[in-house]
Image 1 (cartoon, one colour):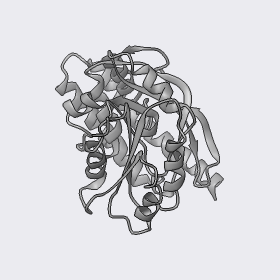
Image 2 (image 1 turned 90 degrees about the vertical axis):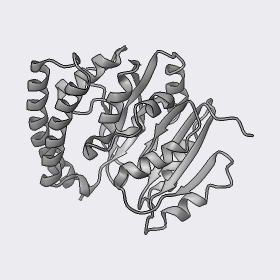
Image 3 (image 1 turned 60 degrees about the vertical axis):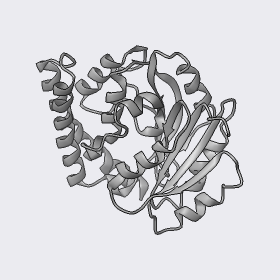
Length: 277
């Protein structure tokens, strides 16, 4: 029986045929850490599965197929359930890890009191050109309890931890808290991180360790409005689920900032859209 790797990197891919090769190469190029890579294709129609299978000569790679339906959470949980490492990192099929990220974050999580770490990321356009560099970790640039990290993120009205490629967490804790949390689809990452952080500390990785690729689908008014609505619902859900975590002022500030962030996000997307034409 093959021993489980220290880190499982999981990629829930869907119609990422154009970018998945670069994503997988960025993972397989990581050094100085024992890891495995699992890709689950969610019934893509653009050749994503064929791209993933090109890497099967590498013994670290496993490729799975997920039946259609169930939304993002179905494939995110499917691929994560197949992980065997004590640490897990989810990378979407159009994002990229920068050199050294896996080893650096695994070292942070060698302290068993730490449940989750996150790094800064470069926000890039469809061509990989940097739109915003070293983005993230506002207010989270020092070690703190997981509860305090969650409270700061709620008060900010936004996901201060970043997209999944920025984050590494303890797989056991992710399983114990129910896996990727689907109740708030636009906040599946932040909601999941928050439940994990109720079980341990947060320590930041202050390097820029990943890229997050912007796409046209993220610019609609309807989408930013729904994100704001779900953020406010999530704030009140977590306040009820974890009594004592948030006060009335935390909720008021977080809800107000979530509304303002939605407006600011829409304006930012308009600027970025002009740059990406």
